[in-house]
Length: 317
Image (tube, rainbow, N blue to C red; front, side, top):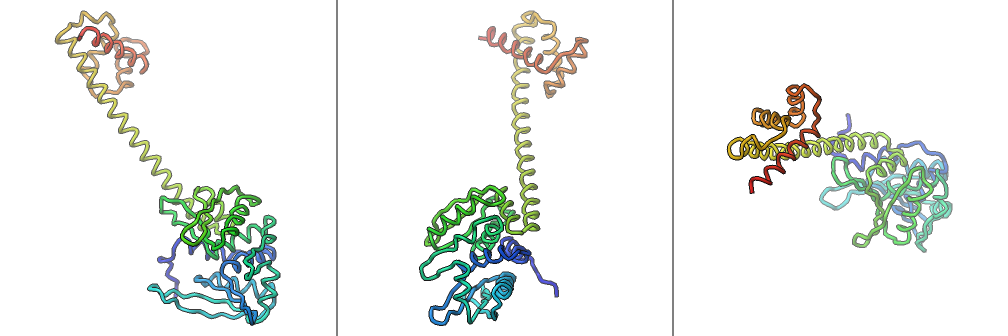
């Protein structure tokens, strides 16, 4: 039966795609180091290592990496949360050898240290950021107008280090920042291009394409709206200017007399304006050019109307 994905969030689609990416050994270890630091637990007495995720594809990837890299017996279990949504939480468990794994990955749960050496080059950094995001990250749906991608952690020193790691030494420039939300620390980026670069970094290429398509469509729509608003505003200004010009021309026709107008070109323009009160300046320039049998520009039309307005202001006081 085909899986219904209509209810799956964009963030989950990103994580599922990233979880299935082919990685080399270096990337896999860095991925595990980041993921286990956030979502792992090591038993103090028995050395049992347990990792959890609400996404089955991530749990399968963790299972695969642990089995391939450390040749240990790994098993699955799951629990159903007591919340209203009744989410399933998948658990990947290593009953023996967990302490050796976390030591190899540079993790110390008891002293709350983090594996700095696991993000020391491009491959490590790429794998580490993928593991960190899949462990506790989220990204807004591209249909939202608020571009936002974040990773949530519980340790301030780790948050600051992860932000520095994010911002340097990777294949694209990032400008992540750190903020506190309740008792958690959030490392986030908000620029749409950087979010696209991050999706590519962690291997979510298809979701990056979907993100870009929606973003570009919205940007084009925004540009179109701005142009329409600009056209509307310009049209309003044109109508207002035309109304003023007609009023001033009628003043000379009915009150002051055309003999006040010395320019033949301006008198011709005044007559054309009265006959074509909705015409644009470009259209007036074409009509006056034909009548005067010479090329007259839009700027020349503007100049003539300014002269008319100055004369109107002078004699109508």
